[in-house]
Image 1 (cartoon, one colour):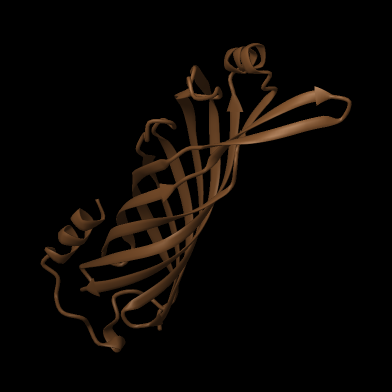
Image 2: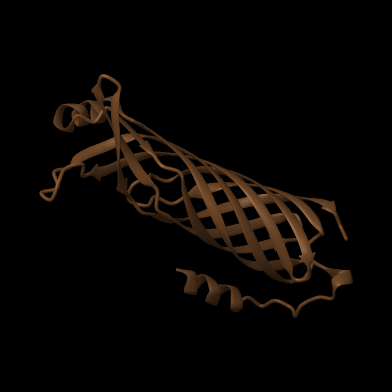
Length: 215
């Protein structure tokens, strides 16, 4: 997927790099965007809202911090057993807040600017299992609670900016948060066990940009 994004970006009919005095991205921006994330086999497709602060340290690079809010639902086979791997169909609600730091490389004109970025994300995940799934886990395996661990991941972003104020972005993200199962044995004894998962998916967003400082 990363190779396809790079090929698509390089094939865009963009002008050569502009001099600094005619830069196509302001020195500081506030960027608000909304979009949808793809399903990844565990979490369903869902809405996402993003708030970004952009700082251009030097042409043609932009450093961007980002805060994302995502909603979705989980519907997946969960394997809490041993080597024989019995499964339970796990359902529930998923919420996530992600913080990110991205470095963008851009080129273009006032009419259209393209950029390619790479960054790190840290996800604060929350999973609320459905009552039926949680009851089945308790009856079969003694699991009293499920949650999702916080995790560091990465993403690749391909973006287009029109007339400096409108944006369209496609981002691919890789994240491997653990599902955390808790067992309460009574008398103050409580244990946790981690089950690895893999989130890989992409998102489409449309955004609007406010220029905080032009030069």
